[in-house]
Length: 64
Image (cartoon, rainbow, N blue to C red; front, side):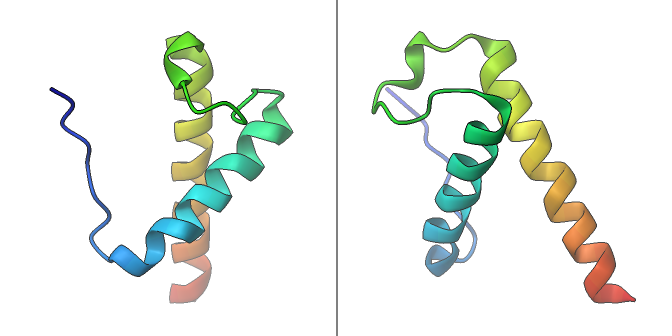
């Protein structure tokens, strides 16, 4: 049974998915397929890590 995490703000899910796809393409990771199980942990982790970096940078900019 998959325990999928949901966004705190449901309306943000589409923007998060778009960001994920954009970052994956910039890193050369193929996120066009539905099954992400064929990707390595390193590939998935690099996308997630870059998403966090960019969201933190955005939050820091908005605080200034």
